[in-house]
Image (cartoon, rainbow, N blue to C red; front, side, top):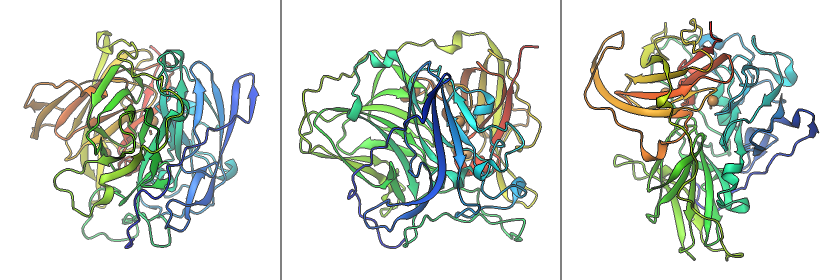
Length: 509
Ligand code: C2O
Ligand code: CU
Ligand code: CU
């Protein structure tokens, strides 16, 4: 789009909390219909065609209590044609063009409800994928309080379905968190950050991937990626939020396809980080800048109490090489213009929660997962895990209840956010190795000592930054369910282009 969209002219939308359709003996029952609709994303943009849950982008918040299971019926009422450019090549060519399956990211769920990529279904469940024919998903909610998110995970279409709008937050509460007196109610706000590009008629712009099956590609281009030139928070382009001079808790999610952010406040004020992907940290950590890769969440408190009348911009540090007209260096604006309604009695506790470090467990397996560049039969670049494509036989089969260390050995040139379904894990360390000298069986030459995780990632994680030329080691306990799950890079373009593999949790013997 040539005309630049004006920043900070629309108020930040506050997402609505979904109400159960009814209460059953198995807990609250919800329905979520996916539909096509139009939504205004900026004051000066015509309404944009989107796909959303309950005609909202992002979808409404599902809020639950720990220990109280819920059921959600996910319904596909979308058109039969995609409005974004579907790539007919690869292994997806025989599948219906529009297919969906919802995954609860970070959720500890049974396989039939996890949203396996091949468990897709089409409009009104006319067709379901080869596995797990089920339409009502059950979420046990036995894990600790945190913000998860639900999003589409259909085989080969995840990048497009998410870009079209199929994503929303899922918040689990528990007593431990409730007892802390953190900022809550209207002072606790999810911020879902996404990048998009627009055509001048307001429609979403997304590049078509070159189709090797149909075109003879002389010179295959680069691995797919998508960087939009516009930042949205909660479905508005560069919004602003009017706040009171007091503490606010923000539950931030990077729901972008490819883009990572380096979040900081332009005034130099810190974030008081209280949580990661999997819930509260042990203690509050003061951080000035927090990197967020796709699908990572952070839970932070910002204290506006001494900033009355000020305007604060939530910025994204693009680094020194950024072009001066790259506008994605800003995310949203806070205006401390509201007057204080009553005293702020919320606190920023020093001690937040307690959990065991998994490294004292007996470790059953050490696995190396090699992140690598490869190419398909047409010479088009692919990114693979252990040199295997999606349909290759499963080689990772953790035993139920066992503790494993997975070492993501990144031999590519950039950082990948590696995500494992079913579990929350802990980051052990990262160790640099010589990218030019490693051999096929993972024999590598380390060039430095292992480094502990950063202060902002010393909690439970379901997604970890695996930087190039480093071995990133994570430890997790594969429980409480057996069956098929997946792990993948959460850059959705990489995931769709085979940087995703199944794994299977098996019963002992
Ligand atoms: Cu957020 Cu397998 O996904
Ligand atoms: Cu997930
Ligand atoms: Cu990747």
